[in-house]
Image 1 (cartoon, rainbow, N blue to C red):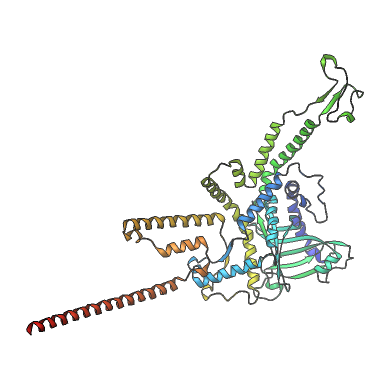
Image 2 (image 1 turned 90 degrees about the horizontal axis):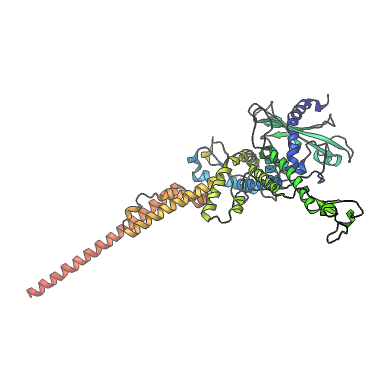
Length: 538
């Protein structure tokens, strides 16, 4: 029996489920992703500009959305995630904190564009989520090559099945290869094909029903993996499988009973259609205004060849004094249409999160305090959206951590205190960072005010209720979080004990010195009195 027969029912089910979405996706792709208008690997439609929209506002809005998400969620200039544990007290223990910090640093090093395409692929990942509600990023370990491949795959290549909770249980990637590409992809073990022959292949990944923990080989993997072909139905290549799902999904608005989510593009679709039609009509109206149709009694008076700037037309006035040639006016006042277009443009921008730059452009006279207030409000509005992003990025980081952890010598042995504690990615949103910074500034202001009162009044009691360790911890967490610059509390206690002992010893020495001086002074005084009595007696 052909190998593909075992996978054909699942593929048919996935295609049927996805066909419910594809008509809407095509409309969205025209406005937002014009290079991805085909959702069938056998239908290669290239962008020729014939059906491009008449207004580029949706494209700009999508780019702003993807760029904003990139900067605020996975900014390469920041430590946008960290490995952590649920026990917050243990996480602050210096050996544990330093080990987790170093492990996270290894993850960030592996994302370097010289080794991985993650930062290059992430904008397309975010853009697909915004346009279609779903984005797919595949992460594959290139065994033997010393690299990890991260590529955003077009939504048209991906098919999936979900369980009752909406979690993916099977994922198929459908793609086409020619004979030369198949030879490289399958290491010489692919189907027989001519070099210029093309065939469709399906990379099938699904939960491993025969999973046996700890077993070597594919049965010891949680996810089974293989490649089959509907064109070469006898072809079958089993792969090693995965401990974690290699495809990481971003989903915007999940729907009950549906495998595919919706995104901001779905909300803006009606406005984008209206904007496109209004822009088309307005462009035509402006063309008629610039080059109006001419009304002439007959072609002997004027032809199209005579419609030249600066040209003159000769002829007697018609009855009623009308000129022999007159333009036919259409849409002499486009202001209403332009106002409507502007309204639709703002609606499209709002669907993709109204940006701070738009507010600043509209109100250039804003003070610095108002700008900071708007930034805080923007971060508050952005925080719920970042949760959607972190759900997919969290799976990516967890898989990357496991891949790095399996490389011998890459990660130092964990502290014994971590035994039995699950390690998972933790994300700090820009809003949380802003809150920490604001909290640190408030604490510093409070301490400085109390120090000023203590200095002005000469009363040190103003500083009695200030916990310097607490202040230091808050400032460290808000400013850096780097564990190597802050000592363990036990080390701090030892330093203070040694300092107190040294101060006590110094105090004792000073007291002994003062006592010696007093004794010497009294001895000199007694000697002086003795000499005085002796002189008097003599």
